[in-house]
Length: 257
Image (cartoon, rainbow, N blue to C red; front, side, top):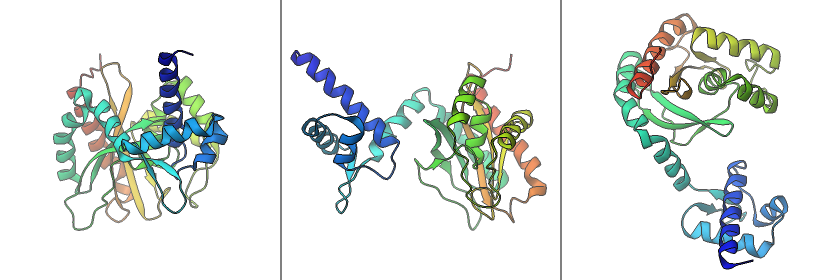
């Protein structure tokens, strides 16, 4: 193998390590990485050491588990923001925050979860403040459900087939047939709601953001205590969120016709 081929091989292995760790948020030890990737321990040690040295991996001192750092999230946000989507969303997010009072978030699908990219903190006395990079599942959370509902049929089917509907509490839908019906209902209404399904006493409402190719590339949502976002008001608040999502969509190039 030539020197150039060796370098390409190391680059490929490095990305395999990163992809593997992205599927294991609690991290993996070097031996676990070796076991799963089936590469020599010496070459993988060199890779994880280099990635740690340049800041793309962290390592727990007690367990020696390697995990992805926030530096990778920064790269992802930069790529997503290359067309100024986040910047072009902020003013509309602020307007929505001023209307509903609660924090307003924007996120996008990465692998099989929605990742929080940006938030505008609510104006009320007590509001939810989430960390950039926080992940949301696709079956109990409003942002996850709305993104899944508006995927093209083939990709949606593939993701549904691999989705495990684990009960988080008594309100979580765990039957796939019922969940498919809910996705159809979300598509019909134009928004998704999480009514106690993820955290009891917390309600969340989300709507899609469309790009110029009419794909739902992101979503916008708000969440708050059930007392401030009661079920009877969900429909009215959802319309404001849908309108906000459309305003952002038009601002990044989406056109209905």
